[in-house]
Length: 213
Ligand code: B1M
Image (cartoon, rainbow, N blue to C red):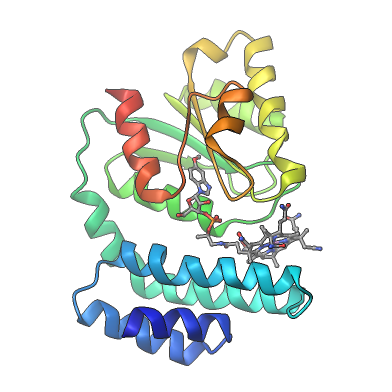
């Protein structure tokens, strides 16, 4: 089964095998979103565990991220096709970024791609985004939604810094704030005063639809 093999090959950092199985899975008619969520993302979680147990080091995390991005080159056109079939009630303008101190960009970029393909306008501020940058972007682009991603427990708290600053500047009531990333939970999102949380890119698109509804 290509999905299972792609997952295993990514855990073992075997690039050619990953790419071959990703192509095979697409040929079998498996949606790109399923390949990403059920296979490649699962592999990244496993790689994270191997890092925690001391079996893998930073070099392996970097290699895994690089292979994931190579696979995304194959998957992105199909992913965009799939997301474009997701219902867009009202087009939103969304400013998105990974918060300051955090350079994990794969999940944030996936969310940005899916939102864009679903018909929304996305302004991607990249990674390591400071509160000042978020505020500037809100003032300049006047988005409907601000999206923040964090994968580190140490950086997730920074989302509250951004929300508090939006409030202090009188901008909070003008935007909805959504958050996500491995270091966040729905409870955490509520606690920091966000309007919504999503576990993955597909749910992020649905959340935006709901908030714009
Ligand atoms: Co890092 N890292 N990392 N890392 N890394 C994690 C996050 C970690 C959980 C690994 C582990 O120990 N198990 C751990 C964090 C522990 C913690 O804080 N609780 C960790 C650590 C410790 C670190 C460093 C501190 C290591 C060090 O230097 N000592 C360091 C920090 C660097 C920094 O940011 N300052 C570091 C560095 C790196 C690399 C640079 C080497 C590399 C990232 C490369 C890159 O992104 N270009 C890396 C990687 C690859 C990982 C893991 C293995 C994989 C992350 C990933 O890409 N997942 C990760 C393990 C894990 O997550 N369990 C780990 C795939 C991606 C599709 O999923 O990003 O979760 P994800 O996104 C999903 C959802 O979360 C959601 O949708 C996405 C798509 O479905 N989502 C949103 C994400 N953002 C959203 C926003 C939304 C809505 C949904 O709305 C706005």
